[in-house]
Image (cartoon, rainbow, N blue to C red; front, side):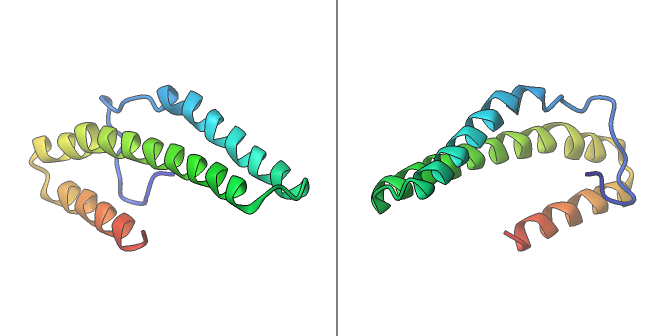
Length: 98
């Protein structure tokens, strides 16, 4: 989702490369659900949850890196002070809500 006032940049990287990892995380979350329904042993469920969380964190880091390398970099290169401020505020808001 693009925040108000944000401009999409021509150099923006595609996020399609993260789809396999996202599907893997979805599979892991599905496995957690099945394990809970099957009344599996708690540590096994926790282990599967940790795998899903790790996969999601990896995806988050990849998307953040792309955002910094493309969107934020482009804003900085544009010398458009307002655009730079928008990007900085976006990042602050993201990390405050973490």
